[in-house]
Image 1 (cartoon, rainbow, N blue to C red):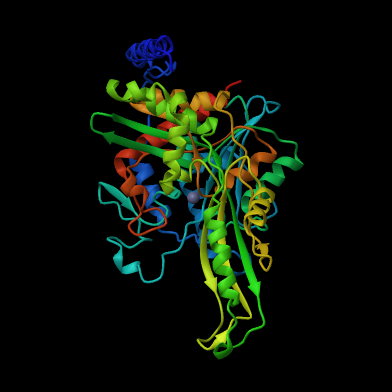
Image 2 (tube, rainbow, N blue to C red):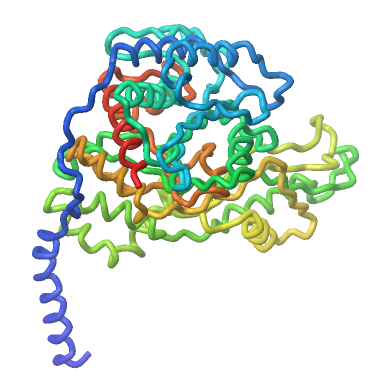
Amino acid sequence: MDSKFKYGMLAGLAAALAVVPVKAYFYKPEKISGEALPDEKVNLDRFRKNLSDAIKIPTIASKDPAKTDWAPFEEFAGFLEERYPLIHKNLELLDVDCKGPRLYRWKGKDSSLDAIALLSHQDVVPISDGTLGDWTHPPFEGVDDGEFIWGRGALDMKNHLIAVMESVEDLLEEGFVPERDVYICLGHNEEVMTSEFSGAVVMCDYFEKNNIRLDCVLDEGGAILPVNVKGVLNKNLAGVGVAEKGYADFEISVTAKGGHSSQAPNHTALGHLADIIKDIENHQFDAELSPMMMQLFDKIGRNCSYPVRLVTCNLKLLKPLITKVMTYIPPAASLIRTTQGVTMASGSPAPNVLPQKASVNVNVRIYPGETIEDVTKHLRKVIKNKKAEINVKPGWKNPSRISPTDSRSFRIIEEICMGMNSDNIVAPYLVMGGTDACHYERVCENIYRYSPFLVNTGLLLTTHGTNERIPVSSMSDGVAFFKRFIRKASEK
Ligand SMILES: [Zn+2]
């Protein structure tokens, strides 16, 4: 390298480094117009009592409607009617010709405008076998010990459902009339995910048949998560789910002659499968930091302390490095690519029998932008063994679309959230599990998955698990958020 060039390079590098401190100084959260909001009237005592009583009704759905115990759902319907008299007097409960879902229409001043929809599901997951005794308070007693309300559904998602009902009942009491129509869509079998009988699909059919377009849909999703990393970040991360991953199970099998294992060939069906598994695992799906993830990192990066911002302000430059590092950390990798996990395996039924068929299950979570066809193509390409049979099992679903972050409704969520607490960082994120929301893509472009409750990670992990509970301290803000959201989002 000639010395002129070398000095030129060094001078360039020095200049670039000199700029970084300045860049980091100005790399701060963008100003959101969400000024501090005035207090919102919330009847916390009523919310506590109603959530606690809602938990007492074990609304557990079955995949097969004929096997569902409908009595708790009927009881839950009666409970809602009794506790929310103004809703049942002023809103229309629409006939969707299906047992289970409850679809309410709150007529606005101008029904020709695109409506807004608030989604919740009434059903909860059952208690896993053998874990009942591990609960501090029984899961269907709705114990309120002053600090927490305990029980199945306290976080997923009777808290959200009851908060929506509380906010609408309050707004009616205050004489509020929305500009647009507001729909409350209560599914009844979200947790069993059978699109064939899905309550969400039935309600969406209703919208489609009646030519009703939705301006926005708000469903369960990210909560407000306190993030406290000393010297780095001390804020709350409010993740608004703008997309959800798809889901598929593939059966990959090899058939063979079988016979007695005392005369085994060099490779049995299971032996061939071993090769196949290696092919799959050695060829992971491509990873990419999508614009959605870049936006998430940018929002977090801007809120970090100055020394950390010296690094995060160069996010674009660091993109390849971050992507690489993330692929080595499974939870992080799941945010940037389609994931695959080889899960169940089966071979022969006895130790001395050669398998006539051996198979494995590959569980795939599909990244938004890819499809089931892309995944099938990928598997066919990477599996070299000609004996492999690749079949997708029923029940798969493509990922959702990605909702925009520059829509009116996203801005409203952001403004309210920041207005309620300036320490909140509102960022788009990717939902790993499924929600009812994706079914609404037929009638809506702006679909957001967000539960406005401040809940730490430890508590979030009790969702679907033992000791599910919600902190009472997070409840008022939940109702306040929905009241503000309905007022603002239903404006012209
Ligand atoms: Zn849920």
